[in-house]
Length: 221
Length: 44
Length: 220
Image 1 (cartoon, rainbow over the protein chains, first blue to last red):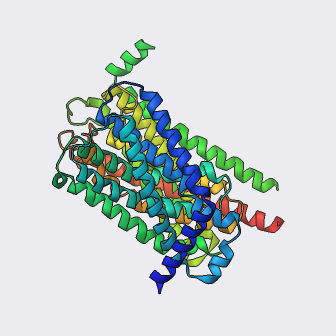
Image 2: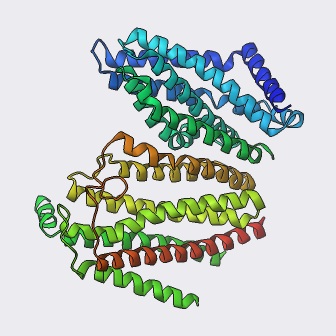
Image 3: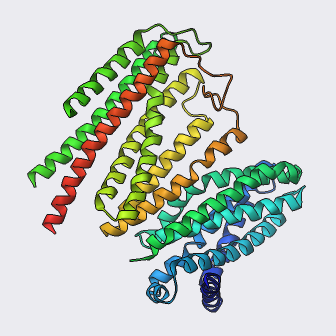
C-alpha cells in the first residue's frame, strides 16, 4: 500500500515534470553553465586528478542544491500540497519525492560526469569502483536534500536558504565521497574503498530513517 | 606587533591569561545583551 | 538553593582560574605552559557540543508534546551553544597560533568546530526565515534533529582524512597530555564549573524568553 502510493506520487511528479519540463530545462542549462565555467577556469592546463575531483563535486553539489528543492517548493507555490495531503499519507509523499529526486540526480550526474570527462582530461583508473562510489554518494545526497527541501518549502527566501541549510548536513557525506572518488580515480581497488562505501551507505540509511520519522511533522499544517 | 608576538611566545602563561580574558569578555557581553533584552521587556 | 549554586559556580570558576594559572604542571613537550589552556578551552568545546545535543533533545520533546516551552528551551540552548562555540573557536585558534604557528589550518578538530558553527548559523538562519511561530518551532526542531544525526559521522570520517596535531587521546595518541592528579582535579573542576555556568545562563535565558513569549501573546 505504502509502496504503491509512493509510486503514484513519483509517477505524478514525473509526468508533471515531463509535461512542463520546468526543472529539467533549467537544470540542463545550469549543468552546461557550470561545466563551461570549469572549462574556462582551467583553460588548457593539465590539472591533477585531486583538483578535478573537487571540481566535479562542486558541480554536482551546486546542481543538486539548485534543483532538488523544486519538488516541494513547486507543491507550495502551485498550492497543490493541500490536495496531495488529502489524497495520501506523509510517508508515501516523502518516499515518492525521494525516488523522483534520485532518478533526477542520477541522470543529471551521468550527464555532468560525461561532459566533465570530455572537457577535462579526467582519467578514471578504477571505473567500476568510481561508479559505485558515485551511486552511494548520490543516495545520501538525495536523502538529505529531500528532507531539507521539505523544510525549506515552508520558509521565506528559499533559494538562498537551501544551500545554507544543506551544506553542514551534507558535509560528512561530501568529505567521504570526494575522498573516495579521488581514490578510485587514481586507481585504488574497490576492496580498499569498502570503508568509505560503508560510511556512505550508513549515512543514507540514517538520514532516510530520520526523514521518514520527521517528515510528518513538516508536512502537516 | 612582532615584539608582542615574541613576548607571548616566550611567556606562554600570558597566552592562557589572554584566553581566559576572551572567555570572560564573551560571557560578559552575552549577559549584557540578555540584561538589555530583559530591560526592554520590563519597559513594555 | 539557587543562591548557593550561583555562589558555588563563582567559587569553582575563580579557583580554576587561580589554580589553573598558578599550580605547577608536569613538563609537557612542545606545549609547556600552553598546556594550561586546556582548562579553559576544552570546557568551551564540551559545552558547545552539550548545548547542541540538549537543543536536539528539547526539539524531540517539542515535536512529541507541542509544548511551546520546549521550543523556547531548544532555541535558548542553541543560542548559548553558539556563544560557547565562538569562544571555543577563538580560544582554540589563539592556542593554535602559538603552538602550531597559524590561527587556522583545517585540523580535524578545527574542521569539526567549524561545522558546528555552520550548523548553529544555519539553524538561526532558518528560524529567522519563518514568520509563523508554530511553523518556526516545528521546522527548526526537525532541522536540529536532522543535523544532530549527521554529526556523529565525523567521529568515523575525520581520522581517515588527515592526521591531527590536536592533543587528544582519541585522535592523536602521540600528542596525548598526561595529566597528573592535581592537573586532572583542576581540569575536572573546570568542566564541572563551566557546565554549571552554562546551565545557569541557560536558565536565565529561558526565563527571559518565556517572559518575552508571554508579552507577545498578551499584545496579540
